[in-house]
Image 1 (cartoon, one colour):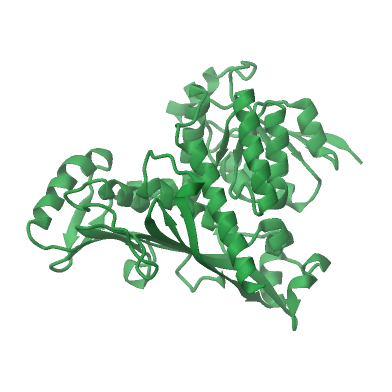
Image 2 (cartoon, one colour):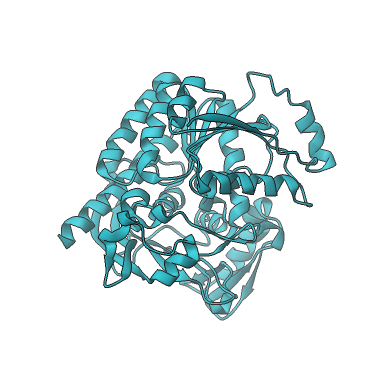
Length: 460
């Protein structure tokens, strides 16, 4: 049964200074950005709405099948609207029905489709959207298999013809230690140049550890059961590694166009995380494994191939990315990130372990002690300080410095969605992405799919 339900979510202004900007915005102005939220099956869809944007119409249009997933999205929007500190003021018009996708395409009540849900469906949504003249703002990954990658290439061709933009949500570019790692790598007097590296000691390496059970916006995250089906979510090697491959390209080759010929896959591995029925129940609220997961259940345990590692060369430099999923982080910890960029003069290392109180911390490890501290002080007092005021470096020993970053810059993962969205809105206003962004997006997904193909071939 199909029906339309209109939901008015009232919120207070998000601050006196911002209220004027929002109130000035004419909701009927065709030049406003109008969001269409399609099938929001992942909580990242809601995080895009955690803040308001002066360029975006306050009414968002939601098209989805009925169910707990869209209800969770609406609950989060309601929570953002009703919170005490900087409440949002989104109004929601929603269509629920089995033909939600057809209705979205035919009605087109907005000009930007926001999609975060089943990765298996995402590329078909994207392709249809650009064919109908809609811009796309999508959670990663855009594709999880070779067939999807071919569709993505077609989607970018059609988007160019129809003058619309496809953009994926790369939040990790805005994590402050990562951003500072990149900036320092651009200072030859401190970093030198990126070494070529080897398989055992890559020039750039990134490792990400995630957890199925976590808290989002202060509440335990309930994941949809399909999240554990690699046919829907994709294996870890094509999912979270998207962020890591993106960071390798973005940090090591800023502003450069990277082609698929620049990528050489060397060594790949994939493995499963094992979940008990109790684990599955805690994170999904389901008492048993659904039938479509039975293919992955052995001896009563669910095998989720969410872990992966890729060693590859990119423009002649060795790179390694790896993603690991555990069920739940130890008390007081959370998702963690490790990264190293090896330069001829120093290594730039991000650690997030017990010594760092499980907070991302950037270290500079000198390869030559002579005059290095003088050059580092000069860099912090000139180039770096201009962009991130207040950054200092504490000397730990003769060759190691710990970088201290003011707390105001450590805003957290959820807040990065607002930063990425603001970036995307600026591109929409300009009518184009940076010249390197589209070819590098294509190469990024080429890399993950090539890694997936090699891993499957090696284990067959």
